[in-house]
Length: 494
Image (cartoon, rainbow, N blue to C red; front, top):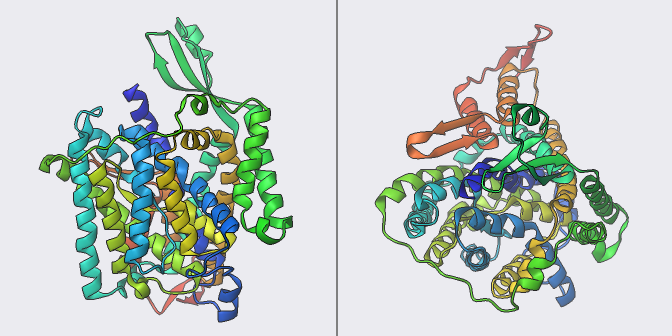
């Protein structure tokens, strides 16, 4: 049901915001201005290094697994073609790597920020062409902003995104998504007969996700020990791979965890291979072309402000884990232009707008492999999978508890990484300015506050809103030479 899909959008967007999660985990994995020795230790394979064929394929598959679920979920909700989304993400990523001169190892997948606006414009799939036209303009706006950055530079980034803001946002990312990881790991949907009276309804203690009056059934989100067991097994496998495996196996712990968890899930009966049997080996994707609609543009274009901030954050974090300033070389303007071209390509063939993916940044943070050949390989695999129905179907059968088990590890590391960043940058929380900025970011982000402008269909929620508020507080609050400690009353240096 379309209503059911729309109702799930908010929670799915939070899952999609794990996109922004691993991006900041990276922030702490590395001292942004750490010594050269430390930087070298954190790079096992640099951007221009090409791995041997077998390793190349395995590493690229790991990135494919990281982005696959979120990339196809957006078109599934908006009525676009999942196969086209895979194709456009692959083509867009290759275009991005070319524009950035092969210096930024970023994968571009479907953006969750556009789910609600596209659904609003398309009206149940009737006006997808109108939505695609607006998405095409989003790509053009990226190009316009790239020109501005090229002209005026990027020094303003250091001013608006200090460690106290970024570190607090990183903590928000991990803690805000902790509930999502546990929910994926331990709960499942169960269809039950619809209660017939108030007494029976009162006995339904779990979350009701859907009510089908025609079939007289309800879908309830319930706790499952079996699912949680599979998630814990996946988590254990990923941890063991990361800590105890040596050589090549030690750099693909996420992939090993997913494969091992998938086997456990299959043995426990949680894997349904029916979609694989039903899918054909070769399937030509269905293309959709844009239709000019300025009304749709007014609805969707404002969302660009959100994804621009997301893009800049991803680039800064990627640069931090690599030990170099990517905003200068090859430049933020090239990165924005590459994302804009990728979004335009996607819109022209019927795919959703693209964005750099935090999941893939998180994979690089753990593996310490930044080769653009690996990212490019994942892009080629995505394009290939858009034509191979059975392979796409097989990956789509990965159960939620498997991904939940891996997410427990990643999200927990992110929250800890944010705290570590504050410590490493010697952020003094006895200074009231720092305390206020951090406190407000944490409560707004973890509390899931929402700023919604219904008339223009623009919504800032949770982490995105916390980031914007943190930036504004950092710009507005005065910086005094000294302040009074809020606990002891003694004067402390800012």
